[in-house]
Amino acid sequence: MKELLINGVRIRQGQSMNIELPIAKLPTHTLIDLPIFIRSAKEEGPVVLISGGVHGDEINGVVTAKRLLEEVDEGLTLLKGTLIFIPLVNIYGFLSNSRTFPDGRDLNRSFPGSKKGSLAGRIAFILNEQIIPQIDYGIDFHTGGRMLSNYPQIRVDYSDKKAMELAKAFGTHYILNSKYIEKSFRKAAFKANKRILVYEGGESMRLDDYAIEEGVQGTKRLLSSLEMIDYNATPQDSIFLKESNWVRARASGIFNASVKLGDSIKKGQILARISDPYGQIKEPVKSPSNGYVLGLNNLPVINVGDALVHIGNE
Image (tube, rainbow, N blue to C red; front, side, top):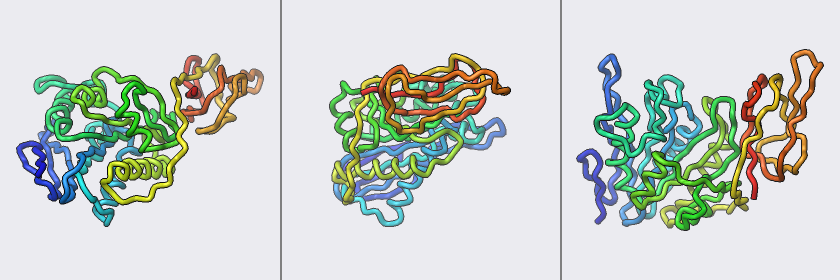
């Protein structure tokens, strides 16, 4: 029977267990633990990580992972394999409403980390040594940045055939070609011959019910494809996007979008208008290509150079 070993604790096939992994102390000497929830079926099968909050202000991802854990605990039967839930990875960022750690470092650019490195590097080291070796696959939930909303999408490297199979099984609206980024959680898993999908949906510091629900349904579709749960999923007609680019502001002023997330757009179409506060100047923002609206700036007052509309191209 397959066993997991996390922080010296052995979890046998069929066991369910909650582990609190000590990671560091606050300046007040209050101990910070990383809660990990293991739910295992009696029959051996894949080990899948479900994680959120790698960026501490991306609350939407935390709630998505939490919802999935609740569904398993409230009656969603796990037929085989094991699920490892870490709904909130970056506890420091969560406490301070911040994407990063107190030293400004991004956990998702700190892998594989070091036992004696920065705070973010130490947490990355724990994940790299304690979690990645245990899993086969994973889904890591993210959102857009401050005042930047993302439409539900999976980001995956098209050259990775196994990851593409998983992305198709997840089956959300858009599957975006995204090369592995050095020092990221996803790249660290890939180097260990594991696969982690990145799901993007919603905006940081806000809850987006649609993006949460789509993340939950996509994960259940993925688990069903791995025969880990019995779930009659309605497959999505995913659109495959080979590249994407941000349209940036050519002027400062008040930003008023005329497109919505998920819209199909044409080259030359007016996406938004930028005006001064007095109505004397109006600058149209036009699409440079055909494509789809993957991300949108929700900030009404923008500066020249700001990212406005994220367009994905087939």
